[in-house]
Length: 56
Image: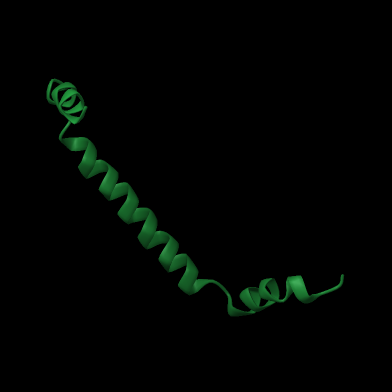
């Protein structure tokens, strides 16, 4: 099964760039989400974490 997929991918010109693009997009998103998580307001995090305990 894998040799059929490999053969089809070998016939596509420029297919070697797709893994690089995918890794770049994933790494960029990971870094941005990590930065967002560390810079998020501590007060907002505390407010959101207490929401299930509030009866309002």
